[in-house]
Image (spheres, rainbow, N blue to C red):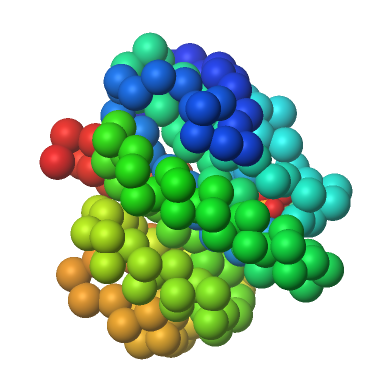
Length: 194
Ligand code: GDP
């Protein structure tokens, strides 16, 4: 699959700010700083579509993007930033649940994890949540350029084990070196049509 055009639709902190239901939505989730904005920018070929955070943890909205007038990318707020207050983290949870539980257009979730580290408790929780709500998903390990091929393979096995991945797809990408992107786009194409 290829993406020709991508444009920002809106940011939403509440349900009534979502764009109307319609085109299939593929949501991207992951911990703050995992490389989600960089990956969305690379996939869409738009360097500044999703902001690359100078200030991790500051993005507290769900951002919707129109892709080729046929589907949407939904950028979910990052989690796990240490300096977030309890109230903020609760509002994050509510925001995620509102969207993930009830959104009819939501087809699948691309769950990002950092290839260098063991998935965090929140990554594990997120995966459990997706399984519980029967949301189709794939896992993408980001920043693959930071590891040698051997280390990457070792870490992919570790990620698979920690997240207890069964049939779920696990891919590695590097937004910096632009690797793994075509495979990811094809996988997203399958999710959209699946
Ligand atoms: P977000 O908070 O998940 O949206 O993450 P960002 O896209 O803002 O990236 C967080 C930091 O990781 C930034 O400093 C990026 O430049 C860096 N980064 C993102 N993707 C990659 C990658 O593929 N390789 C490397 N080496 N760094 C990356």
